[in-house]
Amino acid sequence: MARRRLVRFGALIAAAVVVGSALGLGIHIARVGGVEAWLNGAGSAPLDTTPPYEARGSLVDVGGGRSVYLDCRGTGSPTVILEQGLGGGADGWGTVLDGIAGMTRVCAWDRPGIGRSPSRGVHSGADTAADLHAALDRAGEPGPYVVVAFSLGGMYARLFASAEPGSVAAFEMLDIYEPDLAMADDPALSPELRATMRRNLDEGNASIAASEQLDLPATLAALEPVTPEPAILLMVDQHQRYVDPDPAVTEALVGAWTRAFAAHYPNGRFETAPTSHFVHLDRPDLVLDRLGTLLAEVRGG
Image 1 (tube, rainbow, N blue to C red):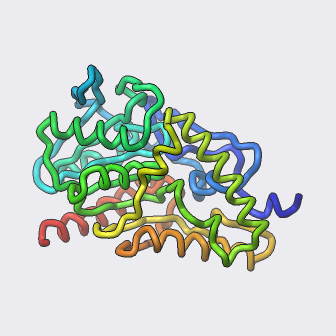
Image 2: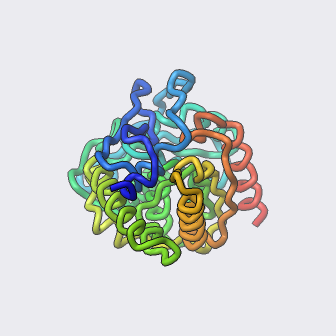
C-alpha cells in the first residue's frame, strides 16, 4: 500500500486550462500519481492576473455541416498556431496573443465541443487535427506554421503536424502532457513502480478522453514521435512532480521522464521554466522571447 503512494501529487488539480470567465477546470482522480503529476505542475494558475480575451474570431466551415471557432490576427510569416490544454481554447491565450500578433500572424482556436465550437461527438485527436487544417485552409491561412502548445495541447500539436507532413516548421511546447510516453516501460524502474504508473496513466487518460470526447485508442494510434522539426520545450522541474520519501526513487522517475521526452524530441531544446504548470500565465515574457528565437530560425532557414 505504501508504494502506491510513492509519488505525492495533489488529487484535485488545475487542469492546464483557463476558459471563458477564467474558470479553472480540474480532474479528481482517486489514486494520486501518473497523469495528475503532469497537469498539477508547481501550483495553481494565477487566474486573477490573466488578461481578458477579446473574441475577434468567427466560426469557420470545416465541411460536413460543421464549423470551428478561429481567431487570427497580426501579419507576417510563419503563422503561429496556439493549441491550449485540457478543455481550453482561444480564451486561454490572453497573456500572449497580442504580443505574438505584434511579431507575426497568429491563430487561436476552440477545438470541437470547446468554447464557441460546436461539439462533434466522440472523435479522435486526428479528427481534431483535420478540423484545424480545414479551418486554416478555408480561412486562407497558409503554412508553414509554428505551433505553440500548452499541456495536453502538446498531443494535439503532434497530431496536427503529422496530419500534413511538412506543414509545421517548429514547436514551442509549454509544460506539455503527452499520453504516449513510455515511462511505464522504462526498465530502469522497478516492476512495481511501472505497474503503478501504468495504472494511473490509464485512469488519467480515461478522464482526459471523457472530458474532450476523445476516442482514445484511435488517438493514441495516430500519434508519432516528433523528429524533423526544431522544438523549444519550456518544462517545469520534474522534481516538483515526482516526489518520493526515497530520493533514489524520485531520481529514477525524473530519469525515466527525461529519457522518454528525449526519445520524442531528439531535436528538442529543453529548458526548465521557473514557473507553475501555467508557463504562459506566469511568464508570458519568457514564452514570447523563446518564440521570437524560433521565428528567427524559421525565417532564416
